[in-house]
Length: 205
Image: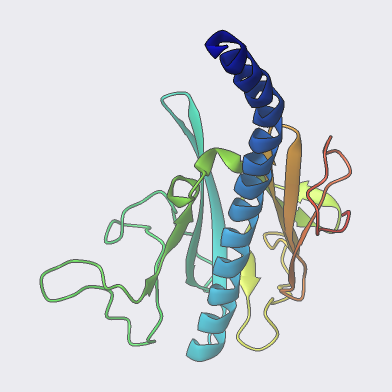
């Protein structure tokens, strides 16, 4: 009887495991997209609070075979910043939320009010971030920047270095979500047509 009971439990577990895995996958991909969306909302509010345009610069590197992404923020002055540089290093990305440029405490530690860098390694599930693409219209562009302006959310800079929209892709096995920011600074999450399985609650991109 014990063997029969164990057999029945094994069958039930084998049936339930795929469903449980699917729930976790959907939760992870949604968490990644929503974390970035919330952060971009913070950037827009900081731009308005400071009454200053804030530029965003992307970065990508491979460490120990793993791809890491980052997005760095600084006051828009047409000079770039390195989102992998530590705060205080030359070329580091930083914006003081309080608009007084006091980036460090008396003991030299960074202030908690700093809006500096969003790195994929800080995500609850960093492996979900699959790609970041900056675009001009429908054309992907490299080494560009995106600007959150202090009034409308995004600034139209008449320059070839400016990306007027961008997207981030989050993938976990058969589930995927894209996070888009358009030229007006509007942020929305959608389900790409390329995904094998759809995440409920999100319209197709």
